[in-house]
Image (tube, rainbow, N blue to C red):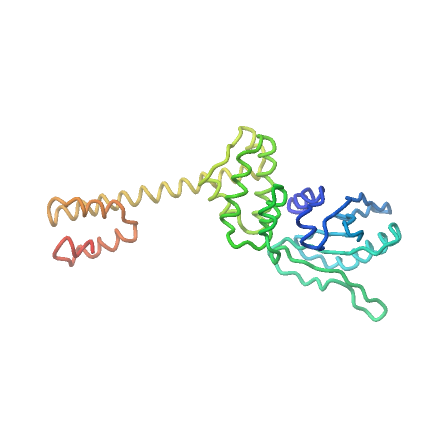
Length: 279
């Protein structure tokens, strides 16, 4: 899944601000951990925290019924390798609720790890971070002003070099789709467009964003055209009924939305004065 790949890419550099939010301690060292077997076991993120704890973080976008057993396997492998039990966290970044109880509860086995839903984390500290990767992760968290957050991240991207901007925008599109914000992102990108390079359309996700932005622009253009047509028709009907229209009436008609124009058109059949129609 592109969601998983994007999240794991963001975590390759051990996100300082998020780790401190989750563990209460900044990271001190990123550890490369891989366990060869019949198949390779590679945890998503393992770091040494500044308080000397070993932290293991797994990223999930959907529920995995085998997750408790995977976490137990990782626990045993890391405890043997580092001679220290790891602090284990499973971070869910999807919109759907998950039923992961955070462990195994059997007669002969009791095992626990911590389950965290990113949508319940405060995204404010991540959005305030000077690191763009933190800002991108903030989109998956709880935000008081989602629209404002997208606008802020897009504003930062506008100042980036072309290649870095393209890569960052691709990740933002993926994370926005994961959180159900694709339409909002397309709207905000249209309102404050960042520079679009010629090769950006080579990326299918960015091509979708640009196409969606153009479709929204066309829809708004069609709506404005429809409103102008209704205004012109109403103006002709009013002039036929009441004669030349005063400036105040023309201004009111030109600024009205389609719903108001329709209401005035229906009222024209019964009203005896221009004021009654445009009240």
